[in-house]
Image (cartoon, rainbow, N blue to C red; front, side):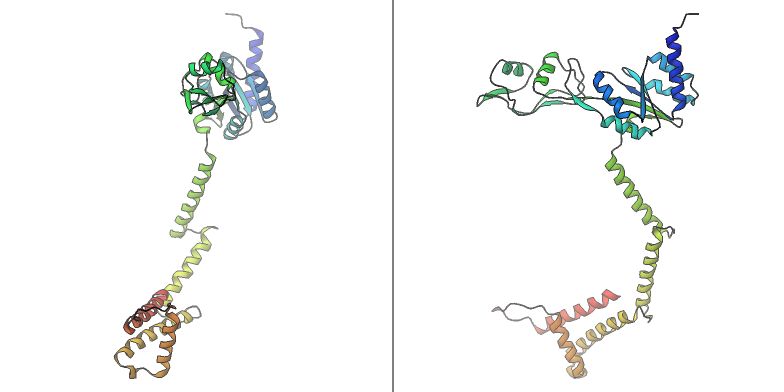
Length: 335
């Protein structure tokens, strides 16, 4: 049997103990993170999470011999680059958000893969005419001299997402102070309560999530109101709806009570004026003076002021039709 170095045994035991003592175990990729930035990130997480880098084989052994549910072994499938375990009591979504928020922009190194299109923007570079003009043009950047300065003529995509950054281009981008890379801890997966959460699941659009929850809440309230399911949110609305429906029913059934009396009287008054107006058209003597006075007053009140013109006034018949429409509309309002 091959001899196993003592430090490896100690490393596995240390990792295993950490795994057993924390509820949430994350697997992260620390590749290409400068030591100074990694130290800053450790400080940011101090008290909330512990980061432990190790070899893949040792991490696998610690996961296998831990006391956690065997589903934790799936974390090994998400080890990338320089793996590290993160131990915390934070839920995986909060941990992911903190790690993403701690990332910083960095210059592109030769051979790096562009995470997205790298664009050199249009405008003055701040460089005086010199050899750099030719260097810019060699890497495909459309530059020329204008008013004693080197200017990029158009926005130019110099590297597409997924392509490699060349040595020459990396140097030019650094001199232009363009930092297209994002440096930070990439949480590739996390384990909690026998469940593995991958990075695509942990990536949440908070604004959209809040909007979705608000929409679901509104729909649930509407459903409970229409299905007459009582709870502390729906009860007031159900009672209000029942009150409105009962009032409408009472009005339409001409049931007189303290709530409907004024509405029914107003409705009857409007209908009376409408009927009197029709009767007066056929026979003015069939309507007494008091009613005629009310009809005239109503006509004045409902007829808008019109500026004087040279045109002939509207026919009296059209005015009476307007009165009838107004009266009918008022009746419909309460019906």
